[in-house]
Image 1 (cartoon, helix red, strand yellow):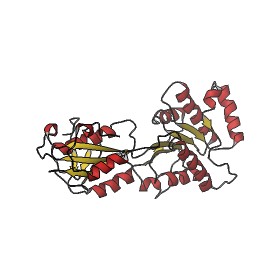
Image 2 (cartoon, rainbow, N blue to C red):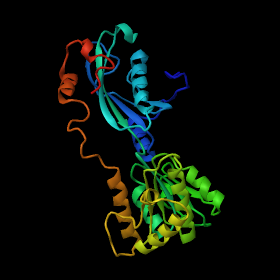
Image 3 (tube, rainbow, N blue to C red):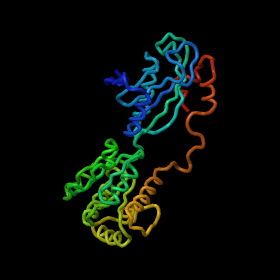
Image 4 (cartoon, rainbow, N blue to C red):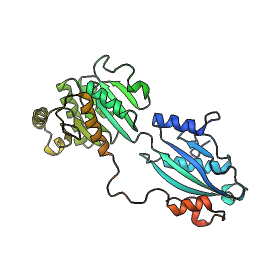
Length: 318
């Protein structure tokens, strides 16, 4: 049983490196726990690794209460919303409250992988939409991809290679279908509208603005493919429908980081992908030091001294 009382799955056959490759491909949040320092009698030596997901544990650090503490620590990171990638150094004494009588201590490097770090809801499986999905699918994104046409999604496409990341969905083109699709968009998702039909584009933009304007769950960004003249026409109609300037300013049209006169789908997709990636880059005011401090790592890799209270579980995190 896990700390939360739920059943825990252990794969006795899959190695940690095979699991790591699989989880990276599927963009599933996970933790790699590695013993980087040990002193005294310990269940495993430095180099032993364990992979933890919210439901599974792959490989072992030696078992016992110590390993359970590592699993619980890993799952505390995975329980945050959203999961944040990061590196932490934890110290575990193998005596007293650890429930083990080895008498040694272990430093464990906890590497948190957020899986899909961003979400895109894409309306339209035309040439630009297909080119954009090809670019983003190998990256840590989850994509909900809508189209209202039969056979719109290409065979042997990105959603076949990355089924856990790219989800093709049928959009019912009536008002109810549009409303349902917009209501299902996850919080903080990027949204791009590039369908084959201008009327459908306009209905989607109106539904998206209604969701944000009415105080519903927020969206990270709203973009629509098209020219400045297309947006001027849309803006006039949406304004007449009651949307104010603040709401209309949320829509980016034209989209793309680089202004280009090219009509080639791949070039447009590259420009749009660059704009999406720029929106999720690390902020300029991020702290200069990140992760575990160098002195902590040197101590973990080289010390043979017994652990003290300053490096106990919970205070060992940087």
